[in-house]
Length: 118
Image (tube, rainbow, N blue to C red; front, side):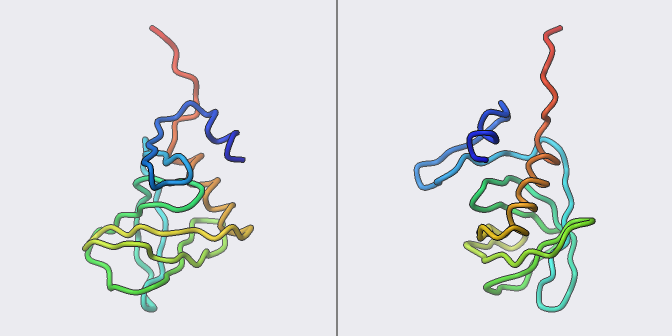
């Protein structure tokens, strides 16, 4: 899957500490995050096979894990790697649900249509 994703030609960012290419959001993609019993809307800023950066409209309570979900998909438990007031860096496991969410995120935030010169 990594080679298929890497061959998309989308804008990626790779830093030395990252194991997989990170895909910057070219389009808005909303998710819901269950944090401390509350369901909060968030958007995906970037995503890779290993994790993502999600942005919230307001400050988010500090915690170790939370659940992300999208319309039509099962909730995925994610581990927080870092957090600022409105952004959270998360790490995915490689469960079937996580891989499904990663796939949906990449397809939803990256323009997969070939660019035509003109």
